[in-house]
Image 1 (cartoon, helix red, strand yellow):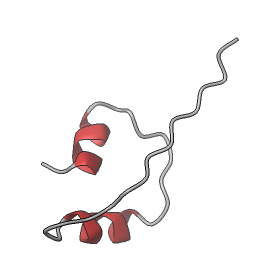
Image 2 (spheres, rainbow, N blue to C red):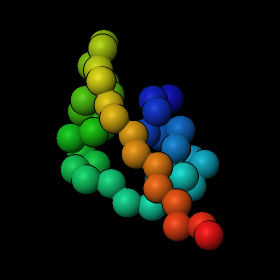
Image 3 (tube, rainbow, N blue to C red):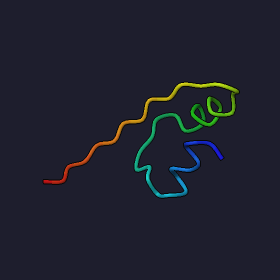
Amino acid sequence: MNIIEELQWRDAIYQQTDAAGLKELTEKETYFIILWHGSNRR
């Protein structure tokens, strides 16, 4: 399981850009991904 699949399994991904490209990227031996977490809680 890669980081994207793990976050999807946890329902932690609301929106993503280029899901197919991210899947292809995470299937490589090494990769670099920037994850951004935003919250509008007050």
